[in-house]
Structure formats: C-alpha cells, structure tokens
Length: 285
Image (tube, rainbow, N blue to C red; front, side):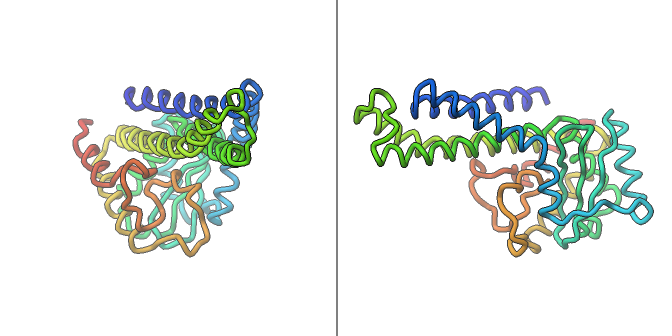
C-alpha cells in the first residue's frame, strides 16, 4: 500500500515537471506562470464539479432506499469499517456490469453501480465491488485521478499551442533561435505522450490500491477477484460506444467501460484483470 502511495507522489511530480518545463520553454517565466494559472483554474473546476457532470453523463439516479435496502446496508457497513461518512448511492440503468466512485472528498462522495452489475453478481461479489469503490473514496483517489487528468489535459493544450507557435515562428523559446524552436517543437510532440503515460500509470496504481483496500475492508479478496472476472465478460459483451460517452471518464470505473481495450499496458487506465485477480488471490488477510 505504501509503495503505491509513493509511486503516485512521484508520478504526479513528474506530470507537474513536464507542465512547468513546457511552460518555461514557451515563454520563460511568463510561460511558467501561464501554466500554473491554467492548472489551478482547471483543477478547481474539476474538484468542485466533476462528480455532478459524470453522474449526469451516465444518467445516474439516486437509489431508492426501500427498493435497494440491501445495497444501502452493504454500503453503510463498509463505510463504517472504512471510517468515512456514508456516500450517496446511484443507479445507472445499463446492461453492462460496472461501477465507479466520484466526489470531491469523503464528505461529498457517491458510489454508482449499473443495473447490469446487480443482475450478474452474487451478494458477496457485489460487496467486494462496493468495498473497492469505498476504498477509492477512503484513499482520495477521485481527487488524485482528477488532478492527474487535469494536468495531463493542460499539458496537451499547452503543447498544441507550442506546436502551432513553433510552426508559425512564434514562441521564441530560448532567444528565438532555430535550435530553440526545434527543441520546443520536439518537446511539444513528446510531452503529451509522456503525460498520458504517467496519467495512466497513476490510474493503474490507484486501482491496485483500491483492490487491496477493499479486500481488507471486508476481509475477503476472492469475492472481488470473482466479480472482476464477471465484469470483464460483461464489458466485452456490452460496450458503451453507443451511449456517446468519452474516454475522459473511463478511469473512474472499476473496469474500463469500452470494449476492445486490449492495448499495451503502458497506454491503459486499468491493470489487466488477470494481474488484478492474481494479486487479490495472493493476498493474506
């Protein structure tokens, strides 16, 4: 657990370093300040409003306490064990089995599950998934992922400006020489790729941590491992492309919601299900 926390700090530091270097090359101190202003502004918006936006995007409705009393009982019990206030519970009406947690902090958090996940999982497996999501809240993963995604987005935006500036002869960089322009252009092309790789590495690290935290909260790692295998099968069967959703929210889910995501691990927001279940089943609780 400590290893994942240290890894996150180092990766976030790397993201920030790329942003500051890019801002510095674009316009020296002015570029540096410009990068800071953009990052602070976008982080503020993401921190306060991302939860409302993602719940609306997936048409999530707050769960009825009478109809879903078992769901409320499980979330209440796990939250108590985690030492956090009980989050709000939302239902997404979709056949794909999936779930996510959102919210700016543990006092303003929500857990959302699909109707599909409640249909195919056993009660104990669903408990494992809920523990994973509450683990995200306990570990402040929503905030960390939002910050990482925001900084990576800013880097891509600033890099796009730098590319146009270098091509058009603007952004003198270092004394406006040709070498400086070439250096800026190369960095502007490489920086977004580096930022994306780091962002995805942070996301994978937090998924492992939430798996571990969730299993410890309910003293059961096998149920979550079994649930992840069922969820993977459901994602392959029920893709979300037709819903008009985007990759921007994919990191929130317990499993990447878009099918056909067998890309290199380096460019994936989630660890492979095989590796996650292997680690879970190797845990000693």
